[in-house]
Image (cartoon, rainbow, N blue to C red):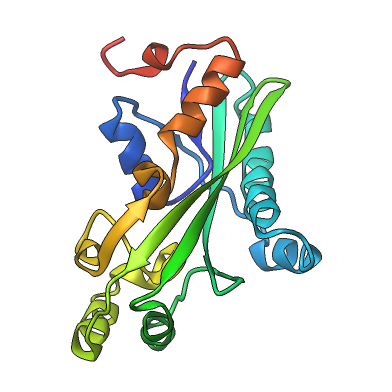
Length: 198
């Protein structure tokens, strides 16, 4: 039995590897914009959970004996969900809006094992530093935050510009180990069963 990650996120894979698990990488390709549009009036936590569920459901049939994890993260800033900025200019604009403010990073998880599933959204408060215009431009120019929810990373260059967080640090990086643990326990599985040394 293996853990299958329905994601192309290097950060999510890195979290699992750092926690002793070598995941099978099986990125799921779903129409995220269409899913978001269909849930335009839904609570933000439900939107990220639906995105995570769509990814896990896309991959799970190919891995019926394994544990499949789908995840999706978005930043809730001033009541609006923010996804990946994708461009340098959008990253600069996003940072101008969030610098010096507090926002909430929502990470939806859908974990499937056979007929069983665990869906949960973790919420972590992120306190952004009052970064200078020069640093914002320089950070955007690195390309690092362009494909990251909230236009930042906690574990790399973006760590310079995060004053603190309140909540689960692994969730901010993209995958909550506590959520995955709760899912495994609900499936009558053990975390240690998946460690590389096991």
